[in-house]
Image 1: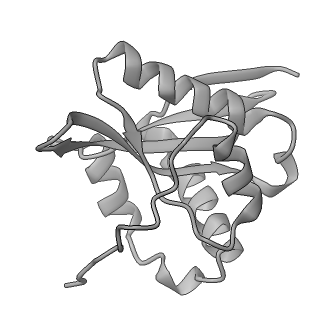
Image 2 (image 1 turned 90 degrees about the vertical axis):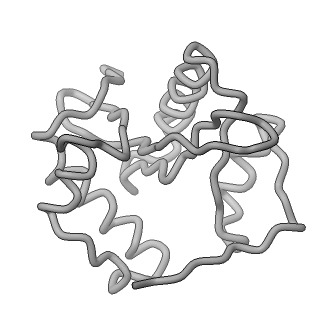
Length: 149
């Protein structure tokens, strides 16, 4: 397997949006992806980026991504928030997600973050089982809260 993990670049954005839309279909919520390509590109590669990503390339084609940003906890300090880790459906089960998550974890450790956080849907048993292999804590106490504008 010819797999390469690298930092995402601006030119990757159309492919990253394809992966994001694929994830939204998997989660039965394709209508929820409302971000424009212009906003997505600016938020990642504009003057003040708010997200960064790693991509996994298999034989030169992007098949997975790990998109993250920095979050601050008043109790724990800087933490890496993993917004999405996405492996395209036809490439799942080949270990690509593990390589990509390991890379993201190592990046967080090497850059002095106090830990990582992310969310997983309660019905996504394959993802939950995958994350449990990392000795993660699944929090049933906190409730997600959001507001849209």
